[in-house]
Length: 195
Length: 253
Image (cartoon, rainbow over all chains, first blue to last red; front, side, top):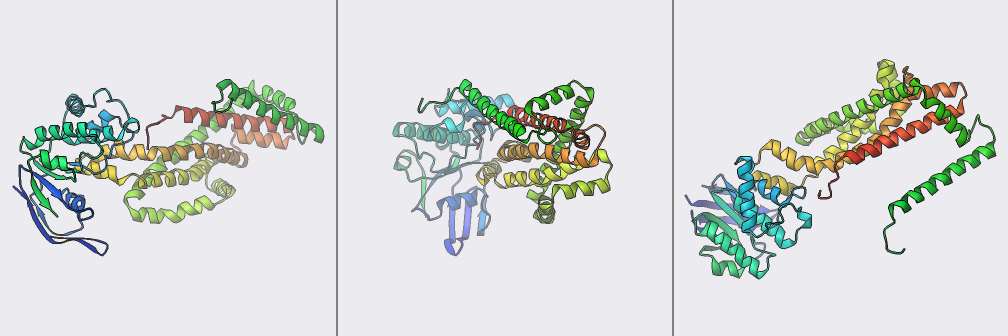
């Protein structure tokens, strides 16, 4: 079922971000949300992911299992790269399966050989790819990506968009993506919503 | 050489030179005063310490004081962690505890010891004093550690439905550990001071504090110095040893 947002009202302090806003996000498709900075794209993602419950309106049909790539990498500094990917899998799979899936995804984002490194030892691009690996590894019914490819060089960005396309877009998964990146719009077959 | 790190040998030599300087100052003071009853010389103190460490009474006293310090530290650590965890979840508990913690922090240690003397038997007074002195430090540090846990990580765990026990073990604990280590480092020093001070006043049979008191009553100043040096050495050894045993996390926060 499509995710439905009806009559959404949300304000920060006294500034209204959404005033009677309604939108439908189709199931099994990729939806790209665009709009100027500060228009409420990330706020909308947080409301859909149930991280922000201080709003008026109706948000319905949001799947239970969500994988969310935040704007920041949010890597746990005391965990290695592999442990960071495994962190979201441990409650779902058996330990051997957790390692297998994590290693497979680390390889897919071209970080094999760096499994035991801590985030402090990784470059900005490597951190982003670790966060992508963690997000992609989780078996979800809804994938939310907030500026997923920022900080990646052109070649790596192409590879990551191709991986995302293969794993989610072509597999007809429900995806919501916020991005200012022209490359995403050019390469991904998606439904565009402008706020 | 400029810009290079001092070698280990250089550090040891520097440490030795500083130690020699202060021993020389002590010797100088002893010579000036020229009254072993007031200031015994380093040599007299070492001779007195040498005489003490060959007796079973010395080691039994050290062991009992050590036991009281460890017992007091462990109890205050456990209480501090438990109450900090409860306070972090229930604001009312934090508010109720706040005046008690502030009062304990401002209470002179001697008041605590004297009150404990009224309430408990002699052997428990040092442990009680240690708990009352260290508990607020463990509690305050742990609570501020829990409060400083980055919300970004708990949000991440929430999105992925990570179990509560894992959030505690894999997010809260690593964030709080540096705060607990800091409290432990402070309390290791405080606990020895509190326990020995309480032992002096409560005089349990086997204790370093009671031996300090006996040396003072018999006007054996060199023994007084020897016991004091023994306390300093053991307290420092325990502190350095324990801090070395704790995991060093170069990758933390």
